[in-house]
Length: 278
Image (cartoon, rainbow, N blue to C red; front, side, top):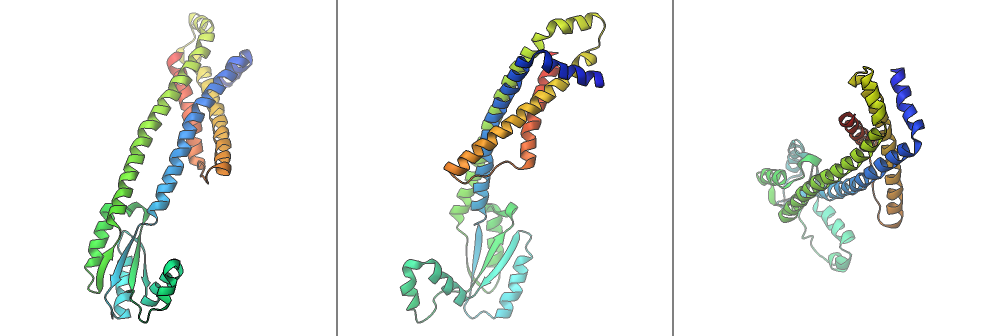
């Protein structure tokens, strides 16, 4: 093991320029993947933020006893899809309308009778914020005797579903394309490193060295190059994130797990190419 580590590190000293070129090429290849990853992460965050606005409103019949509403609210909160159910009285609905609908504030102030019904606002858990589950919950709400009408913006929820499906499909195809291009570029770089030592490899085989003995230093060297390239790529991506965050829009960066995945991808691609070329 010590010999393997020593041989892998010696390769960097023997050909520092080629090693630096390899790490730089891997870094910029992963940087392109990282930029696409940032776009995907922020698109998912944006869609998640829009999905948080998915809400079902059950309007109640006038004169419904508060006891029945309280029991119904508890039953609704017991639905497996429901995150929270909030009762909004007629007075609360009017107060909210006056604060939010500024252009109609004077009209609302002059009302002699409150025309707004009481309601129960239902928020769903994140994994149930799609058209199928929203429709199912809305149908169950209509079954309550004190519910007059149920609204949730069917067209808007269906469009959100389609947008999520399109984003997932595009992300998968484009992400796979970037990953394949990165692997090809990394493979070409690794091939140069192996060819540079092809005579040494041939001599080692002539004196009886096993394939495992020959490969181990190359594999460790590939893992180190991939890890260094991945770390540089994460650093470049973070720099791009800071610029975007400062000059364009407020953006999100990778989580620790996502950043480790980029570094791991670089190491895995480098090791895989070393394994095929040696």
